[in-house]
View 1 (tube, rainbow, N blue to C red):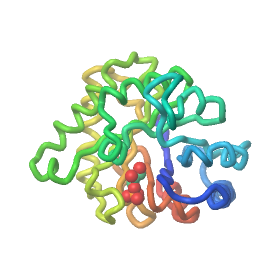
View 2: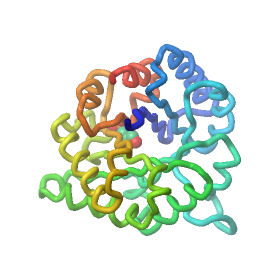
View 3: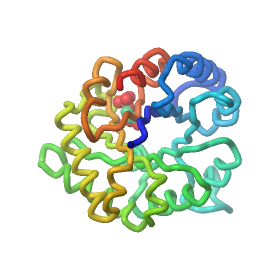
Length: 250
Ligand code: 13P
Protein backbone atom coordinates (compact mmCIF):
# COMPACT_ATOMS: atom_id res chain seq x y z
CA UNK A 1 0.00 0.00 0.00
CA UNK A 2 1.40 3.38 -0.98
CA UNK A 3 1.42 6.17 1.55
CA UNK A 4 -1.31 8.78 1.01
CA UNK A 5 0.20 12.22 1.47
CA UNK A 6 -1.11 15.77 1.45
CA UNK A 7 1.70 18.29 1.74
CA UNK A 8 1.35 22.07 1.95
CA UNK A 9 3.91 24.29 0.28
CA UNK A 10 3.51 27.68 1.90
CA UNK A 11 6.11 29.18 -0.47
CA UNK A 12 7.16 32.72 0.55
CA UNK A 13 3.99 33.49 2.47
CA UNK A 14 3.16 34.37 6.10
CA UNK A 15 5.22 36.06 8.80
CA UNK A 16 6.42 33.81 11.61
CA UNK A 17 3.47 34.68 13.91
CA UNK A 18 1.04 34.14 11.03
CA UNK A 19 2.68 30.82 10.20
CA UNK A 20 2.49 29.68 13.82
CA UNK A 21 -1.21 30.57 13.90
CA UNK A 22 -1.81 28.68 10.65
CA UNK A 23 0.07 25.63 11.95
CA UNK A 24 -2.07 25.67 15.11
CA UNK A 25 -5.23 25.70 13.02
CA UNK A 26 -3.94 22.84 10.85
CA UNK A 27 -3.10 20.75 13.93
CA UNK A 28 -6.54 21.48 15.41
CA UNK A 29 -8.37 20.48 12.25
CA UNK A 30 -6.12 17.48 11.61
CA UNK A 31 -7.44 15.78 14.74
CA UNK A 32 -10.55 14.78 12.75
CA UNK A 33 -8.49 13.26 9.94
CA UNK A 34 -7.94 9.56 9.27
CA UNK A 35 -4.47 8.47 10.34
CA UNK A 36 -4.09 6.85 6.90
CA UNK A 37 -3.26 10.25 5.43
CA UNK A 38 0.16 11.76 6.09
CA UNK A 39 -0.13 15.52 6.47
CA UNK A 40 2.93 17.71 5.93
CA UNK A 41 3.44 21.46 6.09
CA UNK A 42 6.31 23.02 4.15
CA UNK A 43 7.26 26.34 5.72
CA UNK A 44 9.90 28.97 5.01
CA UNK A 45 13.23 28.40 6.82
CA UNK A 46 12.53 31.19 9.31
CA UNK A 47 9.37 29.41 10.52
CA UNK A 48 10.70 25.88 10.96
CA UNK A 49 11.72 26.01 14.64
CA UNK A 50 8.54 27.74 15.84
CA UNK A 51 6.24 25.59 13.71
CA UNK A 52 8.08 22.47 14.91
CA UNK A 53 7.00 23.35 18.46
CA UNK A 54 3.38 23.62 17.33
CA UNK A 55 3.50 20.28 15.48
CA UNK A 56 5.20 18.36 18.32
CA UNK A 57 3.08 15.36 19.29
CA UNK A 58 0.62 15.92 16.40
CA UNK A 59 0.18 13.83 13.26
CA UNK A 60 1.46 16.69 11.09
CA UNK A 61 5.04 16.48 9.82
CA UNK A 62 7.36 19.35 9.00
CA UNK A 63 9.02 20.07 5.65
CA UNK A 64 11.48 22.67 4.41
CA UNK A 65 11.20 24.08 0.88
CA UNK A 66 14.84 23.82 -0.14
CA UNK A 67 18.34 22.99 1.09
CA UNK A 68 21.88 23.81 -0.05
CA UNK A 69 23.76 21.73 -2.61
CA UNK A 70 26.89 21.79 -0.44
CA UNK A 71 27.34 20.24 2.99
CA UNK A 72 28.83 23.23 4.87
CA UNK A 73 31.16 26.18 4.69
CA UNK A 74 31.44 29.54 2.98
CA UNK A 75 28.07 29.67 1.21
CA UNK A 76 26.52 32.88 2.53
CA UNK A 77 22.77 32.72 2.82
CA UNK A 78 22.45 28.98 2.30
CA UNK A 79 20.87 26.45 4.66
CA UNK A 80 22.30 22.93 4.76
CA UNK A 81 20.47 19.63 5.07
CA UNK A 82 22.36 19.04 8.31
CA UNK A 83 20.98 22.30 9.73
CA UNK A 84 17.47 21.18 8.80
CA UNK A 85 18.11 17.83 10.45
CA UNK A 86 18.98 19.59 13.70
CA UNK A 87 15.27 20.47 13.86
CA UNK A 88 12.41 17.94 13.58
CA UNK A 89 12.32 18.41 9.80
CA UNK A 90 11.28 15.16 8.11
CA UNK A 91 10.87 16.31 4.50
CA UNK A 92 12.33 18.82 2.06
CA UNK A 93 10.72 20.00 -1.18
CA UNK A 94 13.40 19.88 -3.90
CA UNK A 95 13.33 20.82 -7.56
CA UNK A 96 10.20 22.92 -7.41
CA UNK A 97 9.62 24.57 -10.80
CA UNK A 98 9.87 28.00 -9.20
CA UNK A 99 13.39 27.14 -8.02
CA UNK A 100 14.33 25.61 -11.37
CA UNK A 101 13.02 28.68 -13.19
CA UNK A 102 14.04 31.61 -10.94
CA UNK A 103 17.11 30.26 -9.11
CA UNK A 104 18.83 28.22 -11.76
CA UNK A 105 18.38 24.81 -10.15
CA UNK A 106 19.66 22.23 -12.54
CA UNK A 107 19.21 18.48 -12.41
CA UNK A 108 22.90 18.28 -11.53
CA UNK A 109 22.46 20.48 -8.44
CA UNK A 110 19.36 18.53 -7.48
CA UNK A 111 21.29 15.26 -7.41
CA UNK A 112 23.59 16.83 -4.82
CA UNK A 113 20.73 18.23 -2.76
CA UNK A 114 18.86 14.93 -2.75
CA UNK A 115 21.93 13.00 -1.63
CA UNK A 116 22.67 15.51 1.13
CA UNK A 117 19.06 15.40 2.38
CA UNK A 118 18.95 11.61 2.34
CA UNK A 119 22.25 11.44 4.23
CA UNK A 120 20.51 13.40 7.01
CA UNK A 121 17.42 11.17 6.96
CA UNK A 122 15.28 13.88 5.44
CA UNK A 123 12.91 12.63 2.76
CA UNK A 124 12.96 14.67 -0.45
CA UNK A 125 9.66 15.60 -2.09
CA UNK A 126 11.11 15.77 -5.58
CA UNK A 127 9.14 17.93 -8.03
CA UNK A 128 8.89 17.38 -11.76
CA UNK A 129 6.65 18.87 -14.42
CA UNK A 130 6.55 20.45 -17.84
CA UNK A 131 5.98 24.04 -18.96
CA UNK A 132 3.00 25.05 -21.08
CA UNK A 133 4.98 25.25 -24.31
CA UNK A 134 6.42 21.80 -23.67
CA UNK A 135 2.95 20.31 -23.20
CA UNK A 136 1.67 22.10 -26.29
CA UNK A 137 4.57 20.67 -28.28
CA UNK A 138 3.71 17.19 -26.99
CA UNK A 139 7.03 17.00 -25.13
CA UNK A 140 5.69 16.53 -21.59
CA UNK A 141 6.56 12.83 -21.34
CA UNK A 142 10.10 13.45 -22.55
CA UNK A 143 10.65 16.40 -20.18
CA UNK A 144 9.39 14.55 -17.13
CA UNK A 145 11.30 11.38 -18.01
CA UNK A 146 14.56 13.39 -18.19
CA UNK A 147 13.83 15.04 -14.80
CA UNK A 148 13.31 11.58 -13.29
CA UNK A 149 16.20 9.78 -14.98
CA UNK A 150 18.86 12.47 -14.59
CA UNK A 151 18.13 13.02 -10.92
CA UNK A 152 16.83 9.77 -9.46
CA UNK A 153 18.41 6.99 -11.52
CA UNK A 154 21.72 7.33 -9.68
CA UNK A 155 20.09 6.50 -6.34
CA UNK A 156 20.18 3.09 -4.72
CA UNK A 157 16.93 1.22 -4.03
CA UNK A 158 17.41 1.90 -0.33
CA UNK A 159 17.61 5.65 -1.03
CA UNK A 160 14.71 5.57 -3.47
CA UNK A 161 12.41 4.16 -0.78
CA UNK A 162 12.59 7.55 0.95
CA UNK A 163 11.70 9.66 -2.07
CA UNK A 164 8.28 11.19 -2.65
CA UNK A 165 7.60 12.53 -6.14
CA UNK A 166 5.36 15.48 -6.95
CA UNK A 167 4.16 16.00 -10.51
CA UNK A 168 3.40 19.69 -10.95
CA UNK A 169 2.65 20.91 -14.47
CA UNK A 170 4.03 24.46 -14.48
CA UNK A 171 0.99 25.74 -16.38
CA UNK A 172 -1.29 24.64 -13.53
CA UNK A 173 0.65 26.24 -10.66
CA UNK A 174 -1.12 29.23 -9.16
CA UNK A 175 -3.10 29.69 -12.36
CA UNK A 176 -6.40 28.19 -11.24
CA UNK A 177 -6.02 25.86 -14.22
CA UNK A 178 -5.80 22.24 -13.05
CA UNK A 179 -4.74 19.28 -15.12
CA UNK A 180 -7.78 17.11 -15.73
CA UNK A 181 -7.81 13.93 -13.72
CA UNK A 182 -7.20 12.01 -16.99
CA UNK A 183 -4.17 14.15 -17.90
CA UNK A 184 -2.77 13.78 -14.39
CA UNK A 185 -3.40 10.03 -14.20
CA UNK A 186 -1.81 9.52 -17.61
CA UNK A 187 1.45 11.18 -16.63
CA UNK A 188 1.52 9.73 -13.10
CA UNK A 189 1.23 6.24 -14.59
CA UNK A 190 3.99 7.16 -17.04
CA UNK A 191 6.25 8.40 -14.21
CA UNK A 192 5.68 5.10 -12.41
CA UNK A 193 6.60 3.18 -15.57
CA UNK A 194 9.82 5.19 -15.93
CA UNK A 195 10.67 4.45 -12.27
CA UNK A 196 9.98 0.76 -12.90
CA UNK A 197 12.62 0.70 -15.68
CA UNK A 198 15.25 1.30 -13.03
CA UNK A 199 13.72 0.26 -9.72
CA UNK A 200 11.37 -2.55 -10.76
CA UNK A 201 8.61 -3.42 -8.29
CA UNK A 202 9.69 -0.62 -5.94
CA UNK A 203 7.99 1.80 -8.36
CA UNK A 204 4.65 0.55 -7.02
CA UNK A 205 5.61 1.69 -3.52
CA UNK A 206 6.57 5.28 -4.36
CA UNK A 207 3.99 7.96 -3.60
CA UNK A 208 3.43 10.33 -6.53
CA UNK A 209 1.59 13.53 -5.59
CA UNK A 210 -0.22 15.92 -7.91
CA UNK A 211 0.35 19.68 -7.57
CA UNK A 212 -1.10 22.66 -9.41
CA UNK A 213 -4.27 24.49 -8.36
CA UNK A 214 -5.41 21.52 -6.29
CA UNK A 215 -8.31 22.57 -4.08
CA UNK A 216 -11.21 21.04 -2.14
CA UNK A 217 -13.44 21.14 -5.24
CA UNK A 218 -11.12 19.06 -7.46
CA UNK A 219 -9.09 16.96 -5.00
CA UNK A 220 -11.59 14.12 -4.79
CA UNK A 221 -11.55 13.39 -8.50
CA UNK A 222 -7.76 13.69 -8.71
CA UNK A 223 -7.12 11.47 -5.68
CA UNK A 224 -9.52 8.83 -7.02
CA UNK A 225 -7.04 8.09 -9.82
CA UNK A 226 -5.05 4.90 -9.49
CA UNK A 227 -1.59 6.49 -9.63
CA UNK A 228 -2.30 9.73 -7.75
CA UNK A 229 -1.33 9.28 -4.12
CA UNK A 230 -2.09 12.75 -2.82
CA UNK A 231 -1.23 16.36 -3.43
CA UNK A 232 1.36 19.09 -3.05
CA UNK A 233 -0.74 22.11 -2.28
CA UNK A 234 0.26 25.75 -2.69
CA UNK A 235 -2.40 28.45 -2.30
CA UNK A 236 -5.02 26.24 -0.65
CA UNK A 237 -2.54 25.15 2.05
CA UNK A 238 -2.61 28.70 3.44
CA UNK A 239 -6.22 28.21 4.57
CA UNK A 240 -6.34 25.47 7.20
CA UNK A 241 -9.95 24.47 6.47
CA UNK A 242 -9.23 24.07 2.74
CA UNK A 243 -6.02 22.17 3.36
CA UNK A 244 -7.80 19.71 5.66
CA UNK A 245 -10.77 19.43 3.28
CA UNK A 246 -8.27 18.38 0.59
CA UNK A 247 -6.78 15.79 2.94
CA UNK A 248 -10.28 14.41 3.52
CA UNK A 249 -10.79 13.92 -0.22
CA UNK A 250 -9.41 10.37 -0.42
P1 13P B 1 -0.86 26.07 -6.23
O1 13P B 1 -1.61 25.00 -5.45
O2 13P B 1 -0.97 27.43 -5.60
O3 13P B 1 -1.21 26.04 -7.68
O4 13P B 1 0.69 25.68 -6.12
C1 13P B 1 1.08 24.39 -6.40
C2 13P B 1 2.50 24.25 -6.01
O5 13P B 1 3.38 24.82 -6.65
C3 13P B 1 2.82 23.44 -4.84
O6 13P B 1 4.18 23.21 -4.74
